[in-house]
Amino acid sequence: ASYDLAALDALLGDVPVIRDPILIRRRSRDFFWYSPILAEQLKEVSADIVVKPRNEADVVRTVAACAKLRIPVTARAGGTGNYGQAMPLAGGVLLDMTDMTGVIWQKPGSVRVRAGTNILALDQEIRPNGFELRMHPSTKRTATIGGFVAGGSGGVGSVAYGGLREPGNILAARIVTIEEEPRMLELRQDAAQKVNRAYGTTGIITELEMPTAPAWPWIDVVVAFDSFAEAFRAGRDVAHADGVVKKLVTPIAWPIPSQFSALKDACPEGKSILVCMIAEPFLDSFRTILGGRGQETYASPSREEPTETPLYEYAWNHTTLQWLKTDRSVTYLQLLYPQDRLEESVMEMAALFEGEVLPHLEFIRFAGRITCSALPIVRYTTAERLFEIIRMHEERGVMVANPHVYGLEGGSRHKRAEADQLGFKAEVDPMGLLNPGKMESYVPVR
Ligand code: FAD
Image (tube, rainbow, N blue to C red; front, top):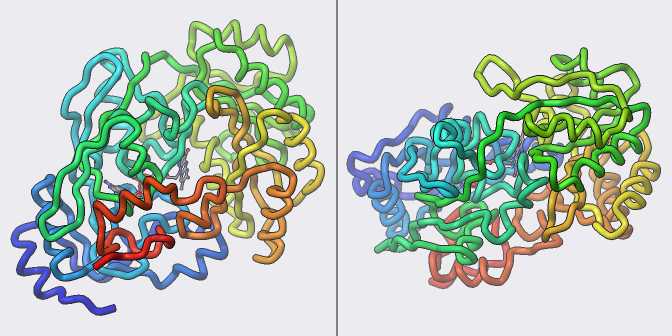
């Protein structure tokens, strides 16, 4: 498509832009290459211009111009999303949100923040007052809070609080609609879910109100086990212990730890590991639960300084990245195991795909119950085989949020673009200009 960029320029006034084609191309990418299928499909995607709003007035000016000129707008923040979430399939404007930063206010239990704020910076600003975010993605050091809400699902902390979809985990979102006369809307409580994991198709988020939790001194722990089943069971017992304050409970099957070069000393040859973050006062209780099972190979206060890799960067979708650093022949899946027969299902799939789908689980709360999500490593052969593996999981009651498709609907079969997000889109983006191609079931009204 070709857009009237000269007219856009005139309407943007002094709003900062990037016109260097190399920079535009670089910003137009995310971690889509995790998927060999998307790596091929999306490799040519690029915006026509990057706009870098300094504040909400700049966002309003930009989207008003784009509405008038019918130019698509795709929000982009840290660019750590997978499956091309922030990639502008129809070109147009890439709206780089990373200059819209800062805490607006904080009080015990909640914080109001601009959407482009880096998540580590946010936590560092609230921690002196004794609070921290309830959960963060493993990309905390590079991602933004707005990108997490618009593109993510949960992460470190979800073993205690569940995912972003759980009531109470997003308190409010302020958005800008894309119309010739944009409106600012404050979405509170359930209404805020209209922008959660909608990939920026239902409004540009300018501010968020997030719940916070008491900040603990966290201890990173690695325990090694002879078998994956033992690592799983120990993790399950820790996850179920409500008295033990924890943020991460992650069983990882050998040979995945063989790829953790910087953590080599904690990953003995042939052993599956359990990676945990435990609040310091409960470390003894944690060890009591393990009851001598496994071998503790690492225990140290959590660190997030720029020079050190936090332990959580071996968990969630960083587990996959650790492997991809040296070997691009693998890929991954995103699974949710059935809560009512968790162990049976986990072990069934581990045996069914032995050597091909390597187990990596994340204990989480889901609707109040402990279960496992998973980001297993897949030794990739062909697209046909990958889709067969997905089907075989679904046939056996394991839900798959397919990370090898870019659309919202195809990506999370178990929770399609929900009716309220679809209906809401007609209100806030009637022309379908926000991140076109991602909410495929939306038909623009003109
Ligand atoms: P981007 O990638 O820039 O954007 C993500 C999506 O949000 C895009 O669709 C974009 O259009 C939209 N968006 C961004 N800002 C706005 C805004 N202000 N208004 C409207 N829409 C907006 N995800 C998890 O949930 N948990 C994890 O533990 C996790 N671990 C990861 C580990 C690795 C190594 C990688 C590569 C990814 C991981 N992810 C995880 C996915 C991703 O990191 C998270 O979704 C992250 O929070 C995205 O933030 P970002 O600032 O990089 O957003």
